[in-house]
Image (cartoon, rainbow, N blue to C red; front, side, top):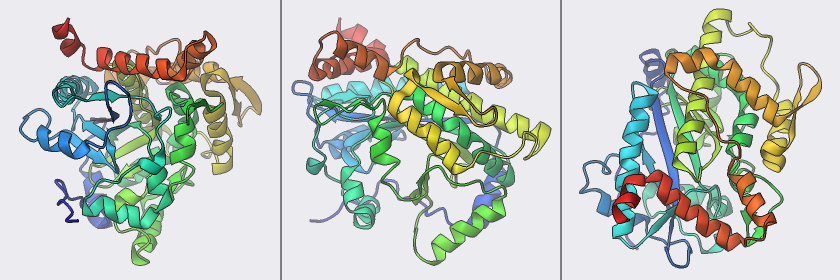
Length: 398
């Protein structure tokens, strides 16, 4: 089989002097949004191996052509807002691109879903996108690549200064568990209730190498030393192989937060993205005021992993450990504190901080308890995704 050429061949991003310069020239608090969708049959809700068809069709659309990307598997499509100078600008552009994407999918006889997992798809049926970039990952990862049929939300926030970006990543690590908990939207797998609120995180974060939560680096030079070693030993050949849940993005000069499940409702996806952006900005603002050690030392990996497990297992219904106060705190209260703490950043970025009363996993579990089948819950979620991600398209059909 002849592989298709990559439509957007990735820069390896491993020239660290150039990457450092990118961060030194970056602009604070620019925003980029990336949302991933499952490609489905609208009738059966089975995954459809149609990414290539959608990508090719998108190239004649001025709105979609710069926005559509693949993400490893050919039953997934991602749209990106591109760089927004403000959150509002990025969100407006993303809304326009959502409408175009859903219209395109509809014209191709397809539906799109936004949850962290597909409730019954068999990963053994999964196919990897047939480009050199993704075939390299399949060769490198084998079963891990095959297993990863998951969907998520990524948020980029511009941070000026390489050392400053590393400091923001280090301190943001301990905010990942509450961000994951509020995003939890993948309770179902293999036709069953997994018992977890975000089984996606177990599939992706626990299986991919160089994933999850890195240890604190403190400085750009320490970070660069590790990446240099990984490069020299050909452990990685592209910066995108550093899959940490928060990472400095080498090409964009941003801090990228990658911990969250895809959100079923479009408004909730933007609200969550706003909270993430506010957390990144607040950490950067406090770093400017207090320095790296202004609030002590960042939590260690084992401490953060404990709270990540609590987020995975119980989502917003559980508790988290406050390691500094040595006490358990309801996760809902942790989120309230997070929203209060980000008030200065939200004011600066023009964000409200409003979040839904229940997240996707909580709503799904309530529907299950009331007697709905997993299949019906997913069908309702797909309809909700269409209604809230592309409201203008839905209104025009009524």
